[in-house]
Length: 167
Image (cartoon, rainbow, N blue to C red):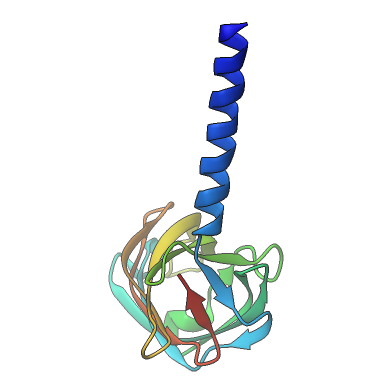
């Protein structure tokens, strides 16, 4: 009987701790569609022979349940910027989750570039990357984030003026 009481007590404690951690989880608001302003992304991949390629990038998506889902990303710029096919966009999307008031992660990040006569193929991700949030400027950034497939996000900067991260 004593071991049953101990089991019930431990189970109750575990449930309470789980509820407390959920209550303190950060969230993104407001609910509904969002679009970022033009930002930039610098990547390295097999298609660039490991060299850095800088492209413009704009994201759009939807916030639901405190999580943002990026369903569209538009790349601008010449050269390799016009070649990637983004993985998981539009569905299931890149899932942006706030981990705190200043940090988060984006799941499902990846892209492909088809092989051509002069460009080797690239198949990166899907991977989860870490991001930072600046509440004062509403800027989302990432730096030195490896993707599977021999790719690297050297830097990412974009502004989502309408979004707020609630710690």
